[in-house]
Amino acid sequence: MLIAITREVSPAIGNCELTHLKRETIDVGVAQAQHRQYEDCLAALGCEIHRLPVEPDLPDSVFVEDCAVVLDELAIITRPGADSRQPETASIARALEPYRKLCAIQAPGTVDGGDVLRIGKTIYVGLSSRSNQSAIEQMESFSRPYGYTVKGVAVNGCLHLKSAVTQVAKDTLLVNRNWVDADAFGDMRLIEVDAAEPYGGNALLVNETVIYPTSFPRTRQRLAEHGIPLMLVDVSELAKAEGAVTCCSLVFQHEG
Ligand code: CIR
Image 1 (cartoon, rainbow, N blue to C red):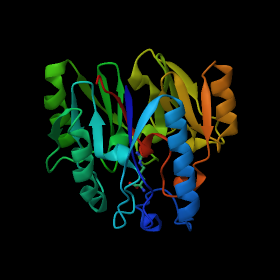
Image 2: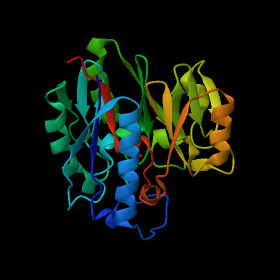
Image 3: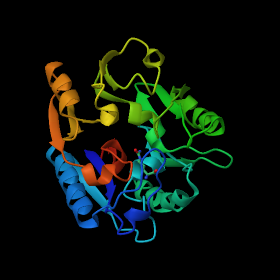
């Protein structure tokens, strides 16, 4: 069974962290409606949705991806790089406890799940403003017993590694080469975002279909031309909070 952990958009989302974007007014009602459509996409692709209660005091709490890295064998509770986001992890740990053995990143380590891209047994971690070498070393010691290798990857110009690169098929990555060196990922097939759509690199692969924002029609066309099955969703209001499609869920397999 595929589980997707999500959390309702906080009414405080207007006070979210912003790194590369200017603050714009966010319509909470629209953001909540878009988030529900996003959950509908996950459900249509076979996920059972576990929606956590709203956190009125935690503006970025809809972006649950940043709070954990769920591997088949264990879940690593992160220590988010923005102080305002660190209180988000406790409830995510409680939600994951029934499904995985847990371990947690400790200070001085910081890492956001948005910086973590797992491809097979390799875990790539973006060295962004949110994630550091100490967290990489801790992730390595947690995951090495299960055969994983952890590699730091430089990212420039964007918030997270997965703002720049995501997996869209077993052997294929979608990438913005201006923000990350695509050679870091070995011999994966690469699809580049359209130059006019730098934020188009974040796509969510679920059961061989890619959940993809409606805002990037040119890159969407490229994905379609490469035979990638797509399910489109409008997340434009969440994008004003510097979020995209991977960040709003933690999707994992549960044999239960
Ligand atoms: C932040 O700056 O932390 C939030 N406003 C956006 C987080 C987006 N997370 C993600 O892409 N994994």
